[in-house]
Length: 190
Image 1 (tube, one colour):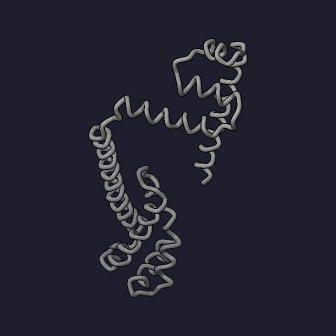
Image 2 (tube, helix red, strand yellow):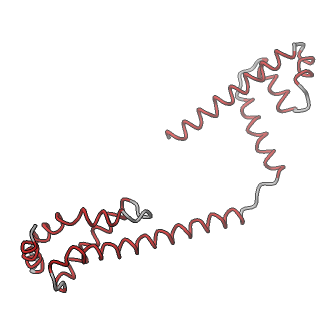
Image 3 (cartoon, one colour):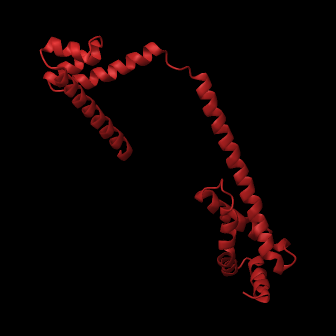
């Protein structure tokens, strides 16, 4: 678009001719979008807001533009001002969110060790209860729930070799890992 064509298009847009406004939008929207994208704090939706708001303001203020050849710079200045205002707001929202997160960390007391242990025991108990009845369940119950017997002592109590007890405990741990992975994957998909 030549300078003369631009000046004529601006005059028509000032008169409210929608095709002229559309031409200006088509010609300059990519430049306005690039300006907005230069502000890292702005997401895709905010960049689109900058583009739309820039053209709304420009078309409203277009009668005040004295030199049509200054249109491009004037339009991009509007875009920069709006993008800056939005990014400043985004940074402020981010600071508030960070402050609230820190405050929550400070104000939310950590669980007492006894309650943490109680919750862990409940999880282990539920996993063991979910096992089918049999020697693996009995071995896991003795080792994890009674918690006072070593693998050697469990072996003696059950009349097994220590390696058999160790193998049963390894199978239990592998089952727990599989269950945990399945739950994590289900949470990601669901």
